[in-house]
Length: 171
Ligand code: S3P
Image (cartoon, rainbow, N blue to C red; front, side, top):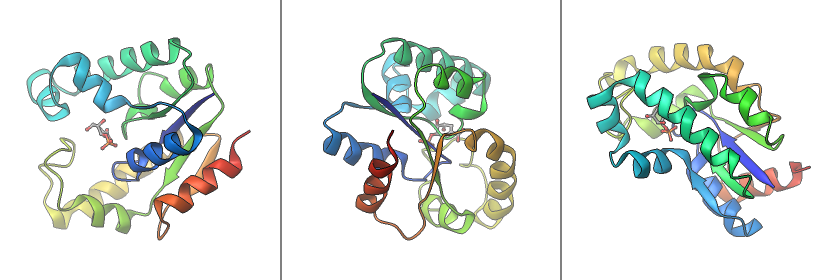
């Protein structure tokens, strides 16, 4: 069984995938970590030295590589992964167990405002401009996130309760 977690930056994908992996006894793979390992660079370094288009190409390539192993796992995507290179179509060729962790704009802002540095897309955006930027960004990305088979609202929920919710929705 391959379970995919997707959602905007800071929606809890990494933390939820770790606990879900422990509970289901499945390996957990974070696509950003995989890209960093393969490229021997951090995500901010890749954006800075090679640019976003290169990053999106590599993101697609490594997503495909991981899916093609057909290993049972929990795969946590980057926030933008579903929105480029027909990645949702590719994902659904391998699994229908896709979960969109849906987080409100105020909650995302709360979580990212003090840790922008590791997120190249928002690192240059002033805190007061975050609501407009994130609002627009989510609006553009929503159509892709909504392609997930399941949507889970995350606001005011603990990692434990999100994991329980996902488990009840597994087919
Ligand atoms: C991105 C989100 C990041 C990372 C990259 C681009 C995005 O992942 O893949 O900085 O386009 O939203 P997280 O969602 O894990 O922060």
